[in-house]
Length: 193
Image (cartoon, rainbow, N blue to C red):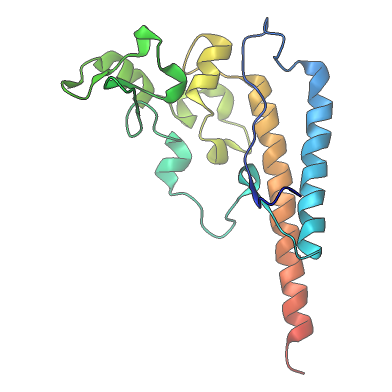
């Protein structure tokens, strides 16, 4: 932040359990603590007049995405596709090069409708594990690529990712509410007597 930028987006690595870069259960407490420290730093920097944005803490308590987006997520494979320099179409940049996810190309369009249909079925209500989660309409069932790379299914549940997401949402809510309280206090202090 002292390098001159005011917007930040970072995510923990998602990879197979055997990869040395993979996060483990032992890492979770540290990551959670760092998320909390980041939220506290955001509020401190607000007070110093040097605010910054952390993408994963951006939350609109008054509006936010429409209900369709809250249910379906990013729309990978249906509304959103990755296009390679050669014109190949994939559901997402994280699937490029994996032939079983090749949807088609820019000249013939989507020809692999089975894969498209599999992604179309990815939503928060297609995953029974999501039904009772308090954050389900913020994550929309999670990332299909993360699910696939950790479970082998685009409709799988990447539990570790769920835990991290819920913690990010907790911190995002804390930052948003703290900012709302500070704004209300400022309005009250500046109101005519």
